[in-house]
Image (cartoon, rainbow, N blue to C red; front, side):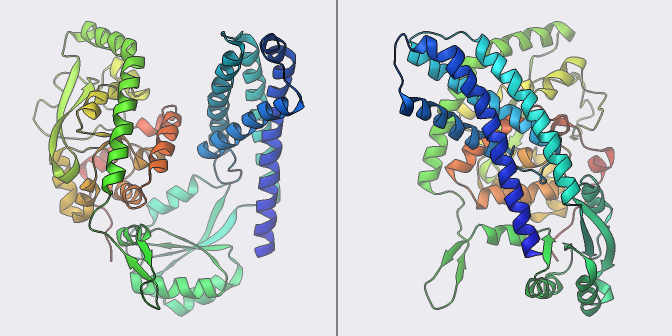
Length: 459
C-alpha cells in the first residue's frame, strides 16, 4: 500500500510538471517570437535574461496553479482542475503582460498574449482530460467501509456518491455491532475506513487500531477536534501539551487584517463603481423599489450592524415579518436578482461595511439575529464563530456551498478562526475569485433545510 501511494504521488508530480512545462513553452514561444523583438528596442537580453524571464513566469504559474488547485490530479474533479488552470493562466498572463509593457515603456500589443492564452486553455483542457483518463485507469476508486453511529448515513453517502471516480463505499457497519467485529472486517479487503459520527471513546480506540495496522482513515471532525487543531504545541515539561487560547486573533494580526481590508476595499470600490452604478439604475427601473437592501446582521461579539446589499428580491419578500433563508428556486427573487446573485454583484455594497469596520474581507458570513437564535437552540457552539469579525467571504464560502448545512459551515468557520494567518486571508481572497463562477456556491438551501435546522452535535 505504501509503495502504491508513493508511486501515485510520483506520477501526479510528473504529470503536474509536464503540464506546467507545456504552458511555459507556449509563453516562451510568444516571448521570443512576438514580444522580445519589441523589448529589444529598449533592452537587450542575454541568455541569463531570457532564463530569468521564463523562470519568473514558471514560478508565478506554479504559485497560482498550486493555490487554485490546478495540480490536484485525482483529488479534484476534472472540471475543477480545468477551471483552476484557467484562472491561474489568466492571472499569470495579466501579470506577464504588464511586466513586458513596463520593459517596453509602453503598452505592448495585447494580441499575442491573448492568442497564447487561448492556446494554453486548449492545452489545459487536453492535459486535464488525458491526466484524468490515465489516473482513473491506473488508480481505480478506493473501496471503503463506513462506520457510523446513531445519525442517518444518507447525507454522507450522498456526499461520497458525488465522487464515484475516487471513492466507493462497499460496506456500512454500525458502531453497535462491536469494535472487534469492525476491526476484523476492516482487515479484510478495504482500501480505507470512514468514521462517521460515532462516540469519541469508540472512535479513538478504532483510530489507534487502524493507525497501528497502517489502514487509511477518513474521519469527519467534531467541533472539539477543530478547536484542538488550532492549538499551540507546547513543550514546557517532558510531555507534549496543547494550548487553546482565550482569544482568536492577536493584536498584530488584527492590525494587519484591518490594513488589508481598508486598502482592498478602497481599490475595489474605485474599480467596481461603474458596475455598482449600472446595477443601481437597472434595479430602480425594474420595479421602482429601493436599490439597496439593509438588514440587521451580527458580527464579532454578537454586535449588530446593518449590512448593505443590492436588492435581489421583491419589495414584499418578507411581508409577514418572518426571517427565512433564500430557498432553492425561490420565487421571491427577481430576474435581475437572479443574475446579480449568481455573479455576486449584490454583495458589492458591503465594501462600505468593510470600510466602516463592521466587516472584514475574510471571515464567517454574518447571520441575522433571528437565524442565529434558531441555530443556537440546536447548536450552542454556533456563537463560537462570532469570536472574529464577520466577512464578505470566508472559509465556508470557498470550501462549502450556500446550501451547506449550518453545522458543516460552523466547522469550516472554526477551522479558519483556529488556523488564522495573514497568508490564509490572502489565499482565500484569491480562491474567492474562483467560486464566483461556481453556480452551486450561490444555490439556495433546500426547503427542508429552511424548516428543519436540526444538526448533529458532539457526543
